[in-house]
Image 1 (cartoon, protein in one colour):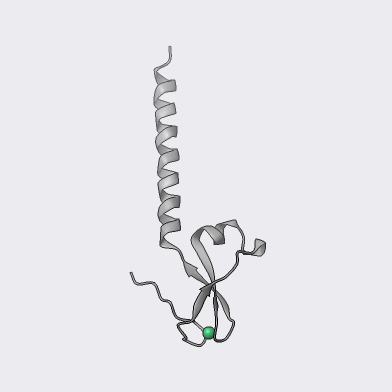
Image 2 (cartoon, protein in one colour):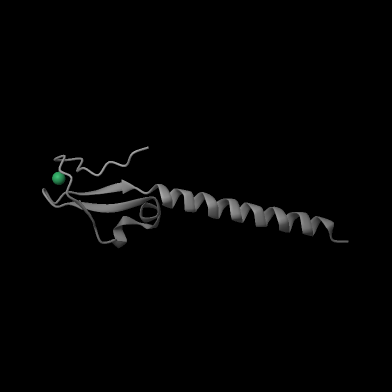
Length: 77
Ligand SMILES: [Zn+2]
């Protein structure tokens, strides 16, 4: 899947990463990265595939440890 690097408003390929803002929220900052078009100053979000991969990895890791704890606690006398 190709990541589009053009502005969704004017189509210019002049996007730069924007500073993270509190109002963006935690979830949005996890899954998206804020970018600003240098041509029209329009602020938009780009999907971050690595962030999703990281989140999935963390969830799987937690699920793994929960499973281990569950198994170990089930074997206790
Ligand atoms: Zn633009």
